[in-house]
Length: 163
Image 1 (cartoon, rainbow, N blue to C red):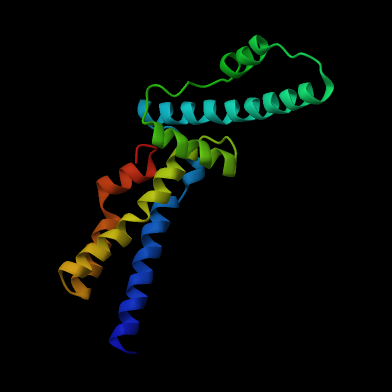
Image 2 (image 1 turned 30 degrees about the vertical axis):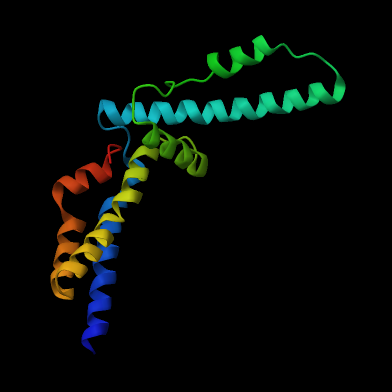
């Protein structure tokens, strides 16, 4: 087997290992600390608000079609009074929006925030490899990628919803 082929197989094995340790048992995970519970609650609020906004838009189109007057005050109360969760004003809005998108993809589940962190955390060993490859040789880049894939603090943040 050639050196390039061994290198490619090692790269794929380390990438697979990094993804596996991040996603292993992710469906049993839930909000770990207060912060990722906030991201989850804000994502849940966004998800419910999205559904209510779609319903409100459908009612506005029906109003234009039928001439029945739906009161804007009632619609505003539905949009800003009914959604459960927490309106996005505490956490990082980007993380809350990513949790919202994950909830739209997999449903409102307690492991949506950890899944977002694990998804983006799985890209970090690849980025570390790319940087180390430009600075050093291929072998050193593989070792750097391995350490990034299995780093303890990195795994903590990637398996919680804090990443």
